[in-house]
Image (cartoon, rainbow, N blue to C red; front, side, top):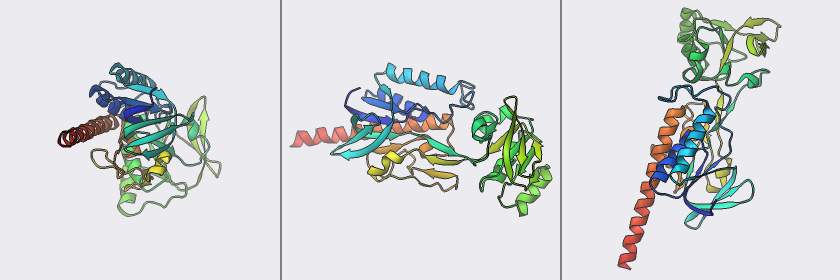
Length: 313
């Protein structure tokens, strides 16, 4: 690993590797720093990605790394603990104490899913505890599904999973009872609503078998859907003045960026879930590739201006 690059990509998932691939193919020196903890690692496969449907997440990452390296890009495993401006560059400090520099940064570190503190939820996360009907819905179709209310989008989530199974129960777990149109819609669809607080997720022979209430009653279920609170992995950006802010959807916190991925800090772009909480693998990859192209053009324009200035000086 060298000390100076044109672009450092922080985060090596679909967005980061796609951005790095675009930059490497543009003959930019690029380094991808990846902590090696992808959000979708617990899942059996990536879904909704054309041409790669069902591919194991880690296999997709390995293929992406190989493609980036094939065009001269570098991919290193490590964590970033700080990033600061250093003259006309950025200095990035790694967890092992090394410092690398670049003219531009592309942040694609993704997010962390915060889920309710209910025994059994975290252990089954990404398997039969899911959050996204488009990522995991087909795999639990026609099963007895429980939706654990955790925020303002829980009724919306219930309606989406009802498209996949007619046996859906909404566990309020302390959240307000649906009213008005929401209540009428759930009733019309035959969605059962349970008001008693949830004590734990029951697991039998390695699979969810029910939802246990504090009363001791167990409601038989085969899968549980819960909306997580999604928080951007971006603590290392604090020194640059970039901090996660509340997302307009109310689903968590993100790093704001415009349609090209440009953040409010000149020279820093963001793509994927770190800025778009609802992005799936395909859209994250597309955003990363687009941001990579925008960064390349930004560097091209800067170099052209410098060359013109040198001619007239």
